[in-house]
Length: 212
Image 1 (cartoon, rainbow, N blue to C red):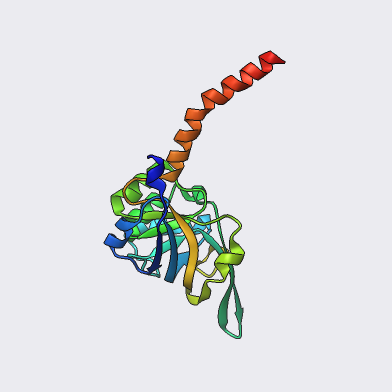
Image 2: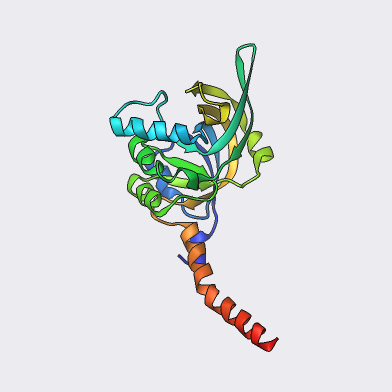
């Protein structure tokens, strides 16, 4: 991937997305999202989702064509009315063992969080026409402004952040397309850059040490 491949475009997207809309997204593009997004940061939740997929059981919410994000979200309930108070991205690599089953089995268009996903998950994203969005770590004040309400809440025996929450959002973002549906991967690009520069850095350190 060269520098031109990460040139940024902006997309204001309404969910759910068509396969053609997902394929239009390229690494480096910026997006905002409006509509319904489903979120959870619970490892037990991810295990439960993956197990349901493997058994062929339906989840309590239909995610086909939709978005599933690793966004930690606290919902306060007052007088029977749930209100999402904040949302903040969590590290996606924690969920690598379950994401291939989840992406492949649920027909997702978008997944996301921060930190990316591993090679096995990236292969499945390409196979299934799904893209990964990177949300700015610590961006809660910005992202929380997009919260408009709770559409549904399932598996409520878990704490709020672990539940399978579907939220209504308006202009959630900006988020960056970090892994696209064509195999483009900003994390692999950055790793290759770092690996190419490492020998030169080590050589300069060696020379500096000898000069001392």
